[in-house]
Length: 203
Ligand SMILES: N[C@@H](CCC(=O)N[C@@H](CS)C(=O)NCC(=O)O)C(=O)O
Image (cartoon, rainbow, N blue to C red; front, side, top):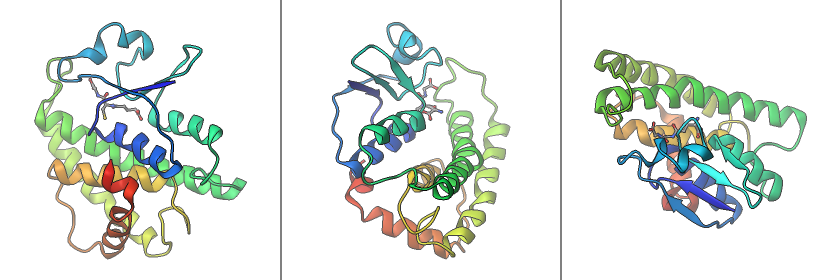
């Protein structure tokens, strides 16, 4: 089993943190996104969408999509559980993970792609859309702040995949100059707490 990834990118970081929380180590193959290795063969046969990360299993099956990879690893290494242990906790975690991914991470990614033009050799970009995405990302943060005022972690009393998605996106938002509102005390508390975990600081 080997993991195709690009160190330092948000989605590779999601899988890294997840693996570190579970004490999993796997051989890693670096894919050069700048050079377009991800949109050419042989990588394209592993993921026709042309994105990292990809987990290639010993039978040749290739899993892409960070959360699908994490779900597979959770099946192999159930402890500590990061996708919930009851019908209710699993659904609450899924809800917050999807909110973090769809409502925040996607906007941060759109801001990065459309403002930096990092992938302009392979996609159309719109600076205006990038700036709108920066605003959309900033505007949703109070929703997460309010939730973190009620629970220690995003989806309850325990760390979950939802925290990993939100934290990775939050760190990347800083890097792509999303104007983070000043009054987010609960996000600040939670972010400091996560930053002190070796899994987050190392990835
Ligand atoms: N939904 C995918 C997103 C994967 C993704 O967008 N990966 C980025 C790096 S963070 C990538 O491979 N970008 C290369 C490109 O767009 O050419 C996941 O969760 O893994």
